[in-house]
Structures are given as C-alpha cells and as structure tokens.
Length: 105
Image (cartoon, rainbow, N blue to C red; front, side, top):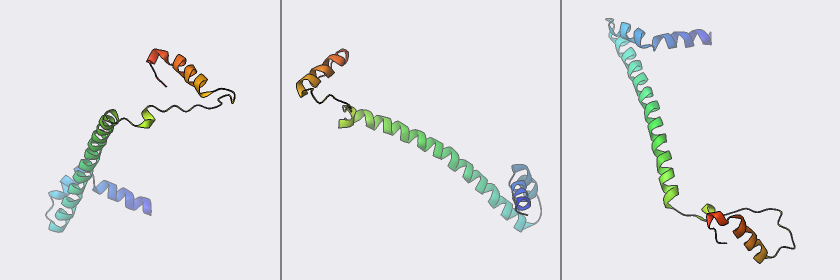
C-alpha cells in the first residue's frame, strides 16, 4: 500500500507530468501542481547552493589555517622515550633527526 502511494507521488512530480497537468483546465489541480513544480525547483536550488557553500567554507578553512599559527602546528608527540635519556640528549637527538628541516628544539 505504501509503495503504491510513493509511486503515484513520484509519477506526479516528474517535469513531464507537471507540464501536462499545467495545461489542464482545473484551477485547483493547476495550482497544486504548480506548487509541486516550484518546490522541485527550490529543492534543486538548495542542493546546488549547499554544494557551493561547502566549497566556500573549505576554502575559508584553508585560508584561516594558513594565516594562524597554533601550537599544534609545531607540536610533536613522542612515546617510549628511554627513562635514562636526559632532556639535553633528547634535544640533540631531535635536532639531528630533523636537521634537514632546520628545526630548533
């Protein structure tokens, strides 16, 4: 029963069906189908515009990320450091590991 109602609704909202019904003489049917037609146009516009807004937001996010420096831009998480290693030894080890990037610890 529910599938039959869905199929009849889908067949009513196709553009060809709406254009055929718009030509009919019944004014209530004409207005109802015109409303369905404009709803379809509105939904299409919202889908296209939401894609555009998403693209703009991603571009804005990239621009803002490049402009602002945060500690996470320079943070490094290190695990399993030997307990016998001093801070100075650790500092020297990281500076030698990343010397090609000219990193100062």
